Length: 361
Image (tube, rainbow, N blue to C red; front, side):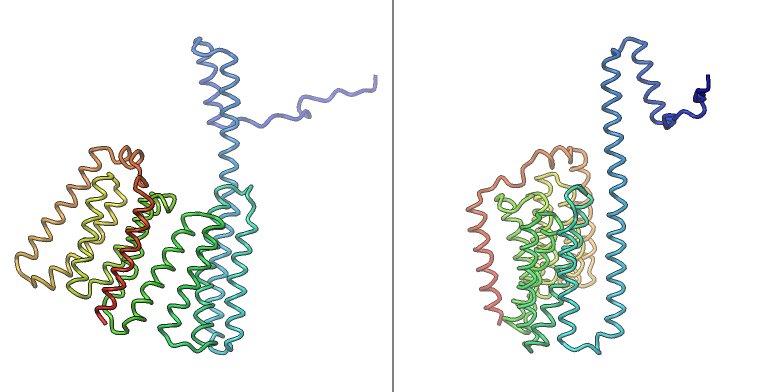
C-alpha cells in the first residue's frame, strides 16, 4: 500500500499554553476534582477566561497604533518648529496662513478618520489630534488678525481667542471627550483674560476673566448643564484657582484667590474628593505665601499662619482618607443642582465681573 501515514511530528500542533493559562487550567482541574464546580461550569469558566484574554490582547495591540500616532504627532510638531525657526521670518503672511491652516485642517481630518473600531485608544488619539488642532487654529487666527487684518494687539487677542472657542466648541460637540472640554475651557479663559485687558489696558485684574470662566464652569457642572459633571467640576476648579492667582496682584485679588482656594477645600471636604482638595490646596499654597509676605512682612505671625494653614490641610487630607474618599466621591452626585439656578447664577457672575472691570478703569 503506497499511501504514507503522516507522522505525528508532521501534524499541526496547538500552541503551547503560557504560564498563566497552565495555572488557570490546573486550578480548574483541581476545583473540578474536588467537586467545587462541575465540568460544565469549568467549560464556561474556560470560555470566559479565553474571551477576557482575547480582549486584553486586543487592548495591548491597540496601543501600538496609538503610540505611533502620538510619536508621529510629536515628530510633526518638532519638524514644524524647526521649519518655523528657520524659515518663518522669510515667509509672507499668505504662506504663514497656508501652513497653519493646512496643519489645523490636517489634524482635524486625521482625527475624523480614526476608525470607531479602534476603541478607547482611537478616542484618545482623536482627542489629542483635535486639541492640537485648536492650538493651530488659534495660531492661524493670530496671524490673520494681527498681520493680514492689521488689528491692534488687544482686539486681535480677543478675536483670536473667540475664534479658537468656536473651533473648540464645534469639536467638543462632535466628540464630547474630556480633552475637548478642556480645550474649550482653555480657549474661553484666554478669551476672557484678553477681554479684561481690552477693557482696561493697565488693568491688574486680568485674572478675573479666567476666574469667572472657572466659576461658571463649576456652577454649570453643579446644575448638570455640563457633562461629565465630575470632570467639569475639576476643570472649573483649576481654572478658577489659576485665575485667582493671576488676579492676586491687588489686595482685593489676593482675598478673592484665597477665598476661592479655601472654598474649594471646604467643598472637597463635603464631597470627600481628594483631587478637588489637591486643587484647592495648591491654590492656598501658591497664594498664601504672597499674601503673608505682603500683609505681614517677615513677622512671626506670618510663619504661624503658614504652619497652621499647612497643618489644617494635612488634617483635611487625612480625614478624607480615613472616612472613605472613594465611597464619598463615587456615590455623591456632582450635578444635583437646579439647571436654571446654575445658568442664572452664572449670568450674575459674568455681569458682576464686568462691572468690577469697568469700575477699575
